[in-house]
Figure 1: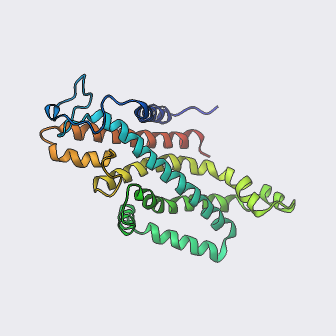
Figure 2: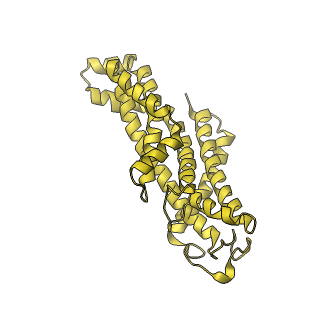
Figure 3: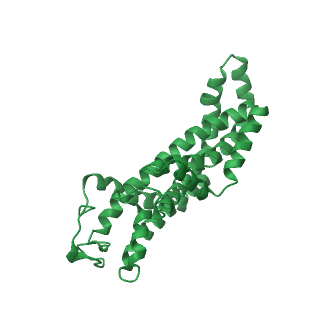
Length: 266
């Protein structure tokens, strides 16, 4: 029996905290996220306001809770779509080989040659950014990495004896790819999916900080950091609390990914 790694335990603990906040925010928040109170502006953390208030008198903790919901949603959708598309392309590339493989990998190299955030910025600008255009941009940014991982795994298994046996017995190429090869490749992909979520959260927060991600009035951690910089000296808790929740979330997913890789990786 494999020993469960410390990273896995820490990651699960941190992620459970963040997901609990996001889940509870669907039904309850201490204050309405858009409720402003001119008499409660820039209040420090207290029993009434666990993370303090911002320059408009809004409760920061309530906004962080709702922000967790939307930030996690963007990250999960991004990684899910990227993994699906990247896996299909990677399977085809590794299985077919030849000129098809060469074209796919050269296209992946082209997309990967540019900094990820720069690529996302260009895509969002071209698409005339809207509320969730960031998802499309991040998907295009993440797909090449999953293509490479799945392609390598497919090359490893397509010549294996059990695959050749299925081929002799008349199994279709579709069945070979998605029923016999991909389940064996998936353990290689799964840790990258977990770490990819943390990368997606960081990318979404960066884009929102620049005003190109989730748009107000929907709270986003990145946009909240942007707002916090205007009161960094008068209300530093705004930036600290927002930055802290981002760090906790990213650290949690990174620990979780490394934990799975160490405990269950091949």
